[in-house]
Image (cartoon, rainbow over all chains, first blue to last red; front, side, top):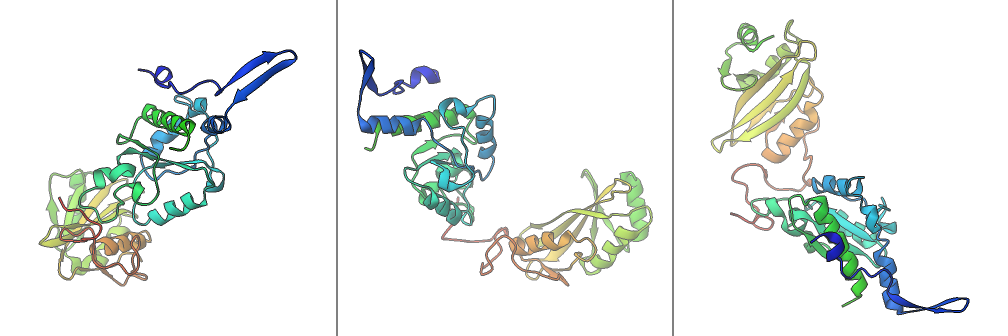
Length: 171
Length: 151
């Protein structure tokens, strides 16, 4: 199953256009149109703590090009970012920094835990004194991505899953 | 200088060098007591000129601690590995931060994670860990019941 067929939620626009003389009338629901707008312009934070960041950069690059899905405006400040992709290991020393970055982001904000380290500590789960065993101990996570590191396709799938989650609206 | 030539030169230069075989680079085991003098010789001796220290590390063997210094010469492009065995209960060795400035941070790292004390180091304090940290995390018997999940 490729991305385009799997992505069943992705309606071109959540509403109906009724053609009338001199233009048309657009009928939609406010929640749906807000969700649609949000999901198509998610600005990720420039944040990477280890090798997952390399895959994230590759996803941003020309070959995988996440701007096809509306992620190209990567921001180096949390105040302008909507989504934080935790690309890498979070160590105990980094945890307060991550928490502060998350707190500085404006609502609505989303979190993707990319790879084994951000999900559970991954290869550093056992016998390590310095690693946080999953970034969700520090901040709430919306989407988890498996892999060590995940391929760019996996990250794209996570980003599209996040878009679908946003379009569905609050649970 | 080739590995063999290096060995001959080091045998003439150092009091009682022991060599380890089977490694990529010439590996010499020295007495930690005379390490600073040995280091100065390695740096300045004609034909050796080890002017670049590119790695300082420590190994915890449970019975003892081994310090490992990787030296290379930007003049002759040869490399030597110097090892020194230290007492695990009280690991002390002289600093070489005045000979190779880069050792200042490298030695702080070894102190931070293994607890090796470098005599004469200008600023020997924790590098990566917090200043109030207890213990030496890269030692084999390190325990941290709060953060560590044992396997």
